[in-house]
Image (tube, rainbow, N blue to C red; front, side):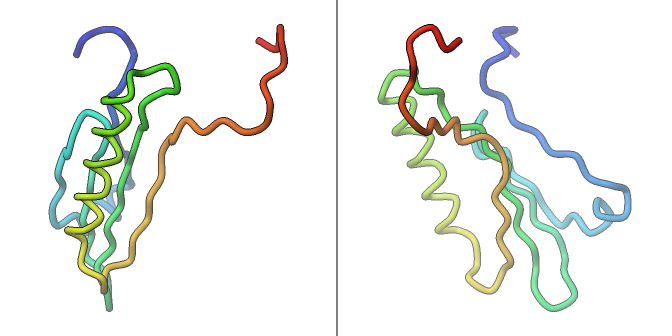
Length: 98
């Protein structure tokens, strides 16, 4: 850990849910993938933390490239849940709004 408070991703789950955990992969410091056993279909959960707006373009590009490669690996029959922080900004930013 670099102590900066930037990046890093995690996931919490109840013991009952955790008992169905089949596998997990820390794809990067911004993407965590967990595979859970379901009754009819498996459940893939992605926990993500996107690069912030002020990050260099290569960091943003790397994040979305990693995300795309991760999504390609997930079987189509799996149920997919993506949660986290995409650091989206909406609307015009007003002066002195912080």
